[in-house]
Image 1: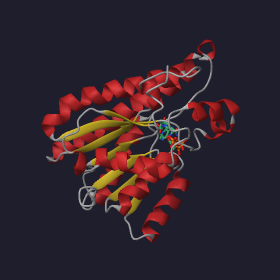
Image 2: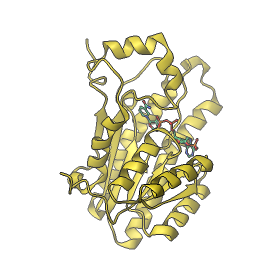
Image 3: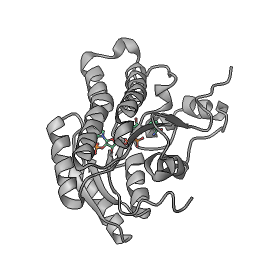
Length: 255
Ligand SMILES: NC(=O)c1ccc[n+]([C@@H]2O[C@H](COP(=O)([O-])OP(=O)(O)OC[C@H]3O[C@@H](n4cnc5c(N)ncnc54)[C@H](OP(=O)(O)O)[C@@H]3O)[C@@H](O)[C@H]2O)c1
């Protein structure tokens, strides 16, 4: 299994690498031998991550990317490719959350959600696939969806809708690109402590929810490592279009 999770010789891009899952995926890919292109808007954070990866003996480069801007996505791929060659592994992970009642979702917040969580994921995936196909190589795209793409939570209508669409996008791209050697799969994390969930985690409601979930706790960051590597590495070579919950059983639900 160690060999199958080996990523040496691969060039990977991680979007939303400036914090949370993205920073974790970048370090994980590097530790397994990949050269890593780290992308997000907060470039200062990316620069520190690159330093950290380099000081552990890895290779990484930081590229500015705003996933709501297609030109910025294209530029980031150009820069990553110039540094390390064709990107064949993509952690398509950038995303935002928005907790507010459906009656208070306005057009601007809806658009921001869809532009980031859905359109951004689509354009990054398409950009990656076009370049792999042009270079005559296959690869793996891992979209970060959510268990809220499989079920719903109160007060998160735009987020749940965006993540459900990412699950369908994942399956749609998977059937079109499988024949080209490109695997597209999605991770559906449950609750993990990151900057996105920090405030929610502090609330009594979240604690009660987690205590009533099957595993009775949130996920630890390293518990997403194996599932992510399974989808990103050759260990998952026959996996196409799956949406893998990593959630301590939260998405099963108890009736
Ligand atoms: N934490 C959880 O429990 C959980 C559960 C299920 C799914 N997820 C998903 O996991 C992914 C990562 O979230 P996280 O929990 O790690 O939260 P996080 O720490 O807040 O990370 C979000 C990342 O997305 C990036 N991002 C946001 N908008 C962007 C934009 N317009 N362009 C480029 N990058 C952008 C941010 O970078 P910049 O601000 O620097 O651009 C940041 O690096 C998200 O898709 C989220 O929906 C999280």
